[in-house]
Image (tube, rainbow, N blue to C red):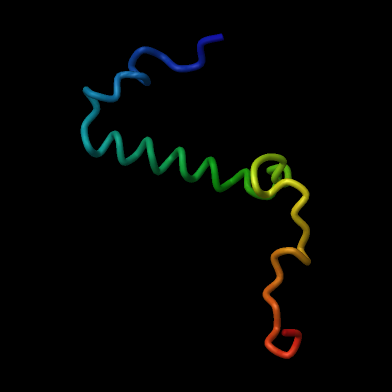
Length: 61
């Protein structure tokens, strides 16, 4: 299923302003889904808990 038009994929002929607008839109869309993103399920973050990432207090050694 093709989602982007040939014009959408033609990055080399876009002006700097068009590229900036496209990146701004992409980043805004990516940020808007943060709350609904699933927890990490790959790489070094698999099975990581809050206790694993909490900083160690000096009095705990």
